[in-house]
Length: 154
Length: 405
Ligand SMILES: Cc1ncc(COP(=O)(O)O)c(C=O)c1O
Image (cartoon, rainbow over all chains, first blue to last red; front, side, top):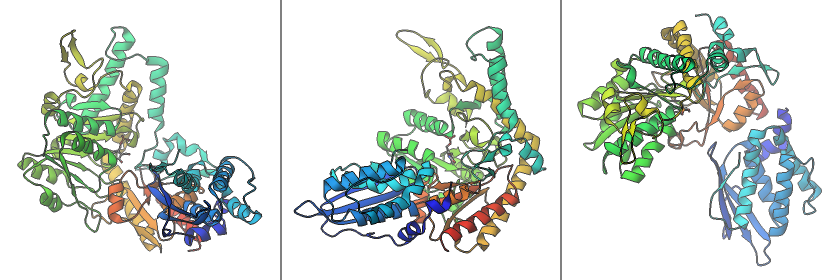
């Protein structure tokens, strides 16, 4: 196990100064997620334009450095993607966090992949995987217009 | 009291946990088990096993005697008046549900008020909430003061003419506050109010005397008391246990079963339906022996010293903020670090073999009140030492370093 791998500078930085920690004005999709075991919660907002492309993404909530950094990086890189692309990226990310050694999605730039790979240290901490994935599941729920709160699986 | 000696009685401390010596500071969650308890479970299953109370063969009779023997030990340990005031349950949670459910069936009426506190564990709130839903009772909350305590005055203030029951923790699993249960009970009884105590954190750490406390019900969690999981104890005054209806129905709790009528068994069988956690009950006798061999006064003194030491250490540590500062405090140190979420603290401490708990500790009402989503909690047991708390402090410093604080 390696704490340095888990708490990389970029995670600490995003955790401390999360991007898009706000509520998108005029959002048209949103969903709430929560982690019943620890009480952490997140609210993801998306604003899709006429072409169904994410014009803005943001989130509100509180949580550990991992969950805040994950939501921060996610909301940053999802902008400019459409629903299909976004969902493929979510699948790719969840696969990577659980088992895959790398990210494969053609919709991610090398730079974006590098950023997301910073979260790969979570793999070694099974109890913390849900911290990294909560905002991603919640974003999918927002796309699908689910009204029920997302609960992280254990 | 020789801690080295006591620690040796717990096999887990011989283990390396991820290559570290274990610094176990999560006893408020569940305590470790002494060898005599583990061995007793093994011995019972390998040499003496039988179900209790059902058959007349040798093993069944012997197992029944062992099972009942623990009931007597518990009775003595908590100084209950009658052996039949001791009911085994699957945990404190079930004990509290039993009380709420049976009082809800036959005693509490629509509009009645139940007074609990902001310190309560979800298991001493949700069962009353069920009655709020099903019977329209009202739940009031006594509020904590600045120090994280519940005072007698606050309880008195929150009692109304409709208050029928007060259900309170003996010792908060977050702030460590020890509540004046005896005084609260006296006050309540003078107004005809029933008192239920969640004794999960009290039982392993305080001297228990039911006849002195005089509360009507007291719930105990055996796994926090150096005993097996899957087991709890409900103490209930005999007049209540006799008067209240059964909780669960099934084998063992009946007297006579006919197609058109059923009569129920006597205490304590009335509340012990089905096959109970037999091995656990029998092994729990060893947990009581273990505590008695040290002496609860010694346990209390040892843990009070540890908490005082730990409190001083953490107070001196910049950016660590302790939660609550009760005058009367048990072995719980809950804290936050400005700029580091409790889950990150717990993960980083774990790397050094320091096991603490992070989260809301099943006390969301309290965390809402404190305006924090979660906290980190170090809690002590008989086997902890000042070195454990030094290690806690060192690991907290490492945590601060990783987060550039
Ligand atoms: C104060 C308090 N009440 C109730 C419980 C629940 O006890 P049990 O695990 O025996 O159901 C706990 C333990 O988690 C506790 O700390």
